[in-house]
Image (cartoon, rainbow over all chains, first blue to last red; front, top):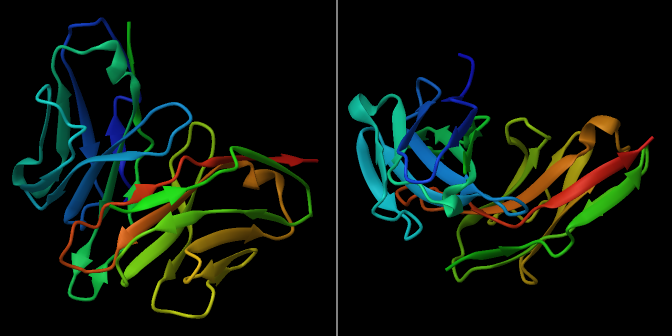
Length: 116
Length: 117
C-alpha cells in the first residue's frame, strides 16, 4: 500500500467554476477525513466518513461543498461555484477504528486549489 | 470546544543542537490524545510523536521527546541533535479519546522550524 493519495495535486480554476478532488485512503482504513489548510494556518476539519456514512460536517462546509464516499472506499470533495476564499490546500487523511481504539491518522499530500 | 495554541510562528536551531517547540491546549475532557505532526515543504504531514493523556510518562521517539504537563495543559516537543531534515512546519494537535467519537484532529497554527548548517 502506498499510503493516502490525492488527485490532482494542484488545481487552478476560475471563480464560479466547479471543482472535484479525489482521495484514495489506505485500503484497510474505515475512517476518512477532509481538512482545509490556508497559508500560515493549521489544518481545519471539514468532514469525516466512517465507511460510506458521512458522520459529521463542520460549519466551515458551506452548501457549495459536498463530499461523498461511495462504497466506503475512495472519497470525492466537490466545490461548486468556487470563490477566491476557497483557495487553500485540501488535505485528506484516513485512519482505522477498531475495538482497540483509533489508529493514527495518515495524511495525503493534499490538493492545492487556486481560484483566480 | 477544544483549542490548541502555538504562539511561536518561527524558530531556528543550529544543526546538532536541541530545540523545544511550545504548545498549549484547552479542553474540559479528561480522556484525549496529543500529537506533534511534521509537514515538510510540499510533502505530506507525518506523525512525529503522540501522548495519551492518561499516561504520566512523557513519550519519546528517538531524538524526539515531549514534556507533557497535564495540569498546565502544556505539551512541548524537544528535538535533540537537530538535523537538516528536521526543517519543516510542526503542528501540535489534539484528539478526543473516546473511541466512538469523531476522531478528528484539532490543530494549532504551526511553527516553522529552520535548521542552520
